[in-house]
Picture 1 (cartoon, rainbow, N blue to C red):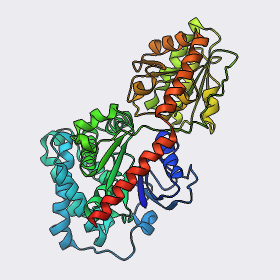
Picture 2: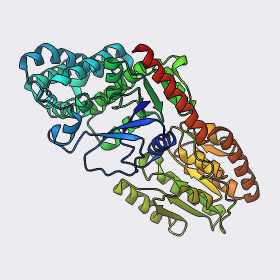
Picture 3: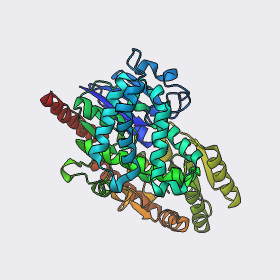
Length: 484
């Protein structure tokens, strides 16, 4: 059985929760052959994970960092010179691309998923015979797109010609997966309803390949937040939001099974119109032998956090909560573990620690390859995110018998509610008060942690997680054999 696992900005090039999930899945099913199809930012990224022997191929698709598609992707284009026909472009490509753009501009509320799915399938077929670079750079392509944007009164009102040009350039990048040859597999398993939806949709249309979508977080919400933080023009943000929402809805439409990592996400899927019978919640799982109850207790009250130093984790709220805790427990120690991919954001966090005079209290420890020890060396674990799916750090901490105080986002409440505390996001005082309450009663906190481990053992083990996915892969592969 061969599974194509599609990732976007994560495994195997970037560490984080989704990458951990991918690595556990691939290594935990050694009898399944995996092809990793990784959409990445640029070709300069290096592997952060050692791929196991059951990964037969890595298809890396960098969207940026090259002028021509063939500079990096030649080996994945299938070989052979492709046509550059102005007649085919006008007769076939332009109508297909217009349909795609019209659906993109409509967004989630008005897009017709069947039309978008069909247009993606037809565009993929077109690029099997026609040169992608030449086609996407032709004046006819740009003029049609610019005219279409101008015809949309709402968008034209806020869009300059320069912004429209930059948007078409972005579309050239986002649609690169249409030019990449689809690996032949029994199942396409996409880890996000984003750009990985493009090859998944194409595989469904042209090869009747079953599609499995795992939903980790609210991808569209996180993309909108990222666009806002990046300072893109209003028109750019609106159209890209519509693009990603339309792609998400089309991915839902072709997915044979949508597997959110928590019940919270099912609300989002119902909003997109996914039938209940195609939704199966599959919780993340961790290795209970690696994340074990070491029965350790630091000499001073200690709070541990294992996360990425990233705006979605809202590290400043976590740092600021220490002022509330320190007022009640003067010798408290905060240890924040994790990589910091954004130097500016790291500097902001360091400045906040200095401004709040927390240099002796809050410590940015850097990345760790041993998160189990980071959890064990604490009385309480914390997380202050503004957006999550079902984070590994929560269930890892519970499995290490540590109570958790976290913000009430995503599926966190489903794991933490009885074995720690959930508080509103962006409320450092509330976060700090909940942490201090647990640190004030260390014997009770220790017992709560043991109860939390028992709950995690019943619900979030890696063996259970792997058994469910193995069964699901077999079920979907059997469907393809029946169609064939």
